[in-house]
Length: 182
Image (cartoon, rainbow, N blue to C red):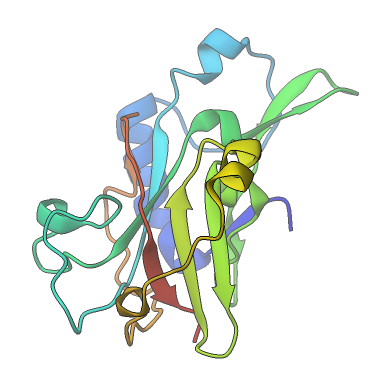
């Protein structure tokens, strides 16, 4: 799917953090803005439960010291240029990050943009790495393999989401981080 749908359990904390950072209510109603205005909005950081069987100190893309109780959680940075969508008919931008999913959260293409995403269906894992989307450069590198140690026994759980989902824009980089699909 194109858009991202987060479980309703996250709505209150997300909207509170948004209000504190942006100074207005979070809405999915279109509005007229310029690109310069859009890039001033915060980058949304999604924290997913990662592998807890090993310690991956100082691994880019993991929570590490930002969340000492969950240092192996995976962080996905979603900049405003990914979650705002221009509607040519109305000539308005709309946030395509919804907080009304009653079931499991759905990470849409707008969250996965600027990331390489690998699916390990047999082990119910996905791998994420921030990407510059230079696929011609990748083709010139040759065959790449994912190391066996990259796949752990991670468990996916949205229940640990707390205040602070929305953070100010930063130069977050994600490298080979993995989480469970189960």
